[in-house]
Length: 313
Image (cartoon, rainbow, N blue to C red; front, side, top):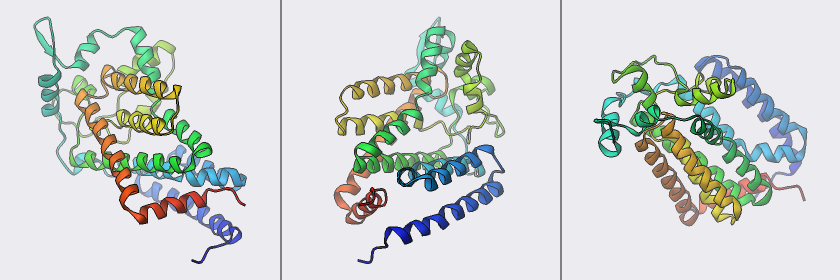
């Protein structure tokens, strides 16, 4: 098999990375308009690629997460509600029928119950749990990159696969989140803006605008099911156990439960959304394990990824 030497490979990358960066910026401008974070992403990727051999290997491995971010950002260019009708009322009534809580002669969804019984302690606790949904997977991936390169790629590709599955469901079954019903009722309004919902109480408690800044940039309001917030910690826990991470298994398990509860408590997701997120994570994990067990081509691709990020001999 013909193998390129490190020199030509690096020279190819030195041309390809800036070229892809330019294509990304131009395509983004056409599809969704200019956003400052696009320059941040491009700057970070190029800085890591050209800074040193270690950072080059690192950003090459993490390009899987870059692909996820770009695809997620481009969802806003193709709103899912333009392809299929949005599930607003049926999902709300199904949640109430399956998980309704009787309170003072009324049947409430769990979201409605906690909206009436929220406390400052739970507001703060759930806010911290919800802040974990991106840093924990990325931090764990960073750890695996330097400690267990093969498991890093298994984890990262599972993460990407689960997101792709979730995106497919978003377009097959657009669904409104609980806060949408609380603010707009059961009628569909296509131009509804994203909302911090219960997480606004966290911002208010600390006098910050962390969640406000996040949810005003929401790529798609009607992408509540499955809850990928709920899927990510499942993936992390699975690979942490596989990595025999000891105490961190318990920590990740606790964070997983906390994110599931926070999703419902803050009215960002129904219990049904959370269960769909868990199912999506398990399907993604299962499909990745099946590919590893049955596909020689996939294993070859995994080996190529490991070679591309291996330290020079």
